[in-house]
Length: 444
Image (cartoon, rainbow, N blue to C red; front, side, top):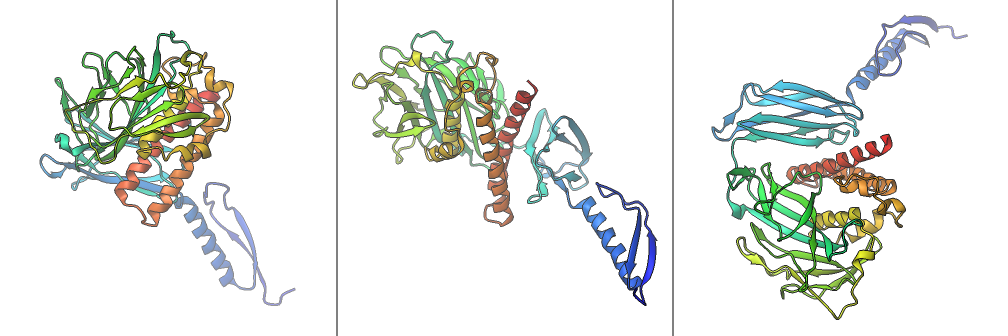
């Protein structure tokens, strides 16, 4: 049909592209140059498909005692996939640098980088590579710690009062959730002494508590002998949000949550369900504001913004019984521990009560039986197990959207690298915990 047209059968070697393979290609073209151009195009496409979805994690390891890089030091990469966990190992070069290359950009794969030196484990967990952030740099400062207590600031300490677990005896017990936003102002990890041990931080609990349960993902323990909550690992620079709950008892004079402070504290918040009739005794708490969260109405007491609380001082956190308020029937209320902890964690993240909008947007609009019927849940399960599948899905979507938004802000250089890494680490840790709980629920 075309006078100058030529027919060519091009034999191409099989090229793996991740999908199919190129085999024999028939090209009808007006010239040989066009055929060569097509071959070049296909080759570039195959090469792009092989490399476009890969990233790397790299960094530098510095011995801060000697102020020089650690050479030939082992670094371990742990790869958490949906059904498997793999590990890779490399060593630092003469400049203390390491690199794990050709890592998939898959939001379902979480990475952890760790190393061990001088009886101390250094780990950065729940790193996620994406097309927005294909490269992550994790540096390790080994061997040096800050120990100046004045560099540790509790920015917010929140108490949420709620009913006891449904199976608890009606003896005046209440559940107390505490959420703490704490900041290490130093450039080094902080470590202090508790007894004969080196720990990250220790926080005092009120007297006569029971049923201590930490909030994931931060790993906390309790020293019953000293009544202290312990973070065993060094407190990293920047902000960290942690929380826990326990059972306390209302006596004739009320509920006493007073304790001696280990660190300077900026502000206290107390959330009391409307109708319970507990009121902070201290005058530094102002008049409450009334807010509705997840179907429950809370009175929110906030300490004066212009008053700070010094470390070493005992702070009055007692709640008196207000006989002028219609008392709520605590034993008849259904305990929703997951809801209580969600409020506590969110309060720490915001340093106040601004988070109410998040719950109104993300939480399920009604409570199902699975929110309250925990008969099949082990007593030591995490708070996510207390949520129904719909609530967990809302949390998962919110986490993913936030991480994507965070990556976008960092890509446009609208937030600093330090803030970005801290927020992203926090969100990916929480996402990992959620995904693990969802996977257990699906396999049940």
